[in-house]
Length: 526
Image (cartoon, rainbow, N blue to C red):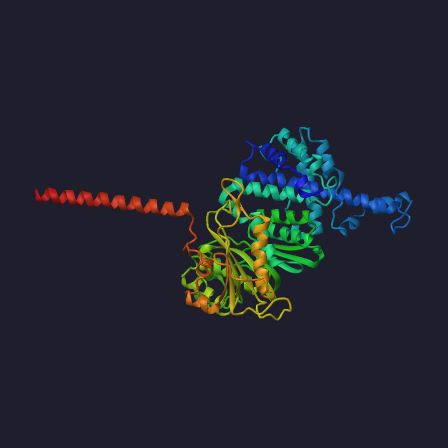
């Protein structure tokens, strides 16, 4: 069944609305997503159980047996399921059991008890999965009827992996909710959600067919999921990739771990602040795909050790407490393998900032031929922030020695996609497949043989390092492709308005003081 054949948006939002009144919108995901996850584990167990049972009945199988005791032993063996990346779920924790009891007054207790049982199995399976399913239903304001209502809605056959094999239906439900909840949560959701069309564009630019994929700001794991989708679309195997990630928020880390387990992906995801507590100091990744939080101030670079191996020079000259953007870039570069490539979302302000600690890093990156490509993005791609954004592509294969790409050490490709994308709602723009292929193909033609690539006025330009140096190291694509170069400091309009309003009030107050003084002076003269 094709992806488009399963339309479930209305039913899923109805399920979320079961929570209305008892739970604030920004907490919906904490109740619904664990249930989707439990449903997945339960269905996965049922599928594998049926597979083993069929092998036992097959005379040509090594598992073939007619001995009831042996059959029960095989079907009960937890290791049989673990070897297939599955857990043997007890009946009282199964989705079938929850569905059968959805109308019971104690369904909240039954859900939390199921969470406890599955959590014990998860922790035993992989200690990283500890505290994935905390008891939250009994102590919530949800009624038994609301809880049962969610279970009944999620029990619809169209939401079943067994009924719809090869559709990744529960994974898609999960992604749908994460996106919807990001809309409900506003700016706070940017920490865990990157719109799908931006992630797809990054993945198509990088083409992560095989190797180590790392996201040190991994949020809910969307970059990894899209990488898997890309591999599937191009006939590759998920066995050819290994996934590493770091996330600083425990609640978001839970979303990510569940998201990856839904896709049966191998992973090593750790909790911590990547800038100050790098949990993978020796990791060299073939691909880094990330959307780090923009313009983070007061991140305490003074706490970095002297001689931190990620820094391009002394920390006093190559960091600033006012903005962490360029510390992220140094972290990405440090973690690339000898032929690795990093693609990440960045605030537009990073392309032109003259703050010393940031400009020093940008100059170093240009002079040392680290930057492969800059893509300027249109506005309204992000629901959760008004900050205009761009993509940076850094690469260690620019010398042409990897056997796949041409030598391009003296060039940087600039792409201006500011006028691309389509408004999919009043507030949001998205790239369609044609947009994504146009941008990615332009980059691929440029970096491989150079054949099929040519500069296009207003869209793309292969500039020399000397041209960039002459432009005061500014990386705004418009300067090079011939579109109007709009200087942008990366500060959202709303923040600018607040600042202007505060300044105006202050000037009004000063004006009042001056008026009083002038009137007093007139009185004295009189």
